[in-house]
Length: 293
Image (cartoon, rainbow, N blue to C red; front, side, top):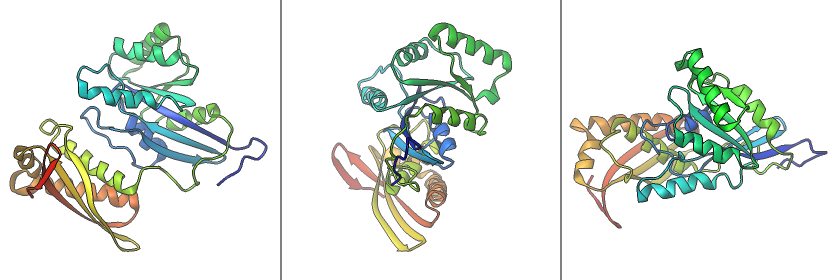
């Protein structure tokens, strides 16, 4: 572990916050240059605070990707929002992400105002600028400045990696001096098993976006290292009724086959190993689970 020598090392926590579907996970993956947090059109797919670690030169940044912040309308949504706000407790810097393709809502402006009134360093990011013309961008920037007196605004396209390096340089300037918390080679404090489960969940949302609720659970039954470069993974997909099973299976099992192929490819790329992935669909009724595969 690196030691602080004459204040040469820097280490800090950076929370990535914003409304659902503004590109927080895409931005995190772009910064780390590795897929860690899942990306989906289904809102609130980030369930917990995903921590990604970037060690660059003499600086170590612990990024926290949070569930989207919004005003909860349902009881089940409240824990997600609480989880997002918890991430600010330990943050040295907040990156507040906004979608440049959408009008900034009053809710987003109110949330931004609440964050900007804290004592934490704030960076506002307008993401997806490649999809918006210059006049619209200038209008959005003016609205942010007028309503929140925010001046530290970055224009980026996380998907195309445009503006990400400049944003990263500014983050490094703002984090405090201090001893590194994690080893240099570590890119996340989330287990490989949990990351693999997230990849499968992402593919399910991708192929059955509207039909499948948040109640699905992915759980690893077996994680077997067959050799140094080969891993066998058995994952259970828990659903709440037989209809969900049929949806995930698809006609002649084609949908689950595609989910398995694409999840396996993501896991292989993440681990840099050959992966044999086996998926099983099981029925969950309250706390009781029975096999229906």
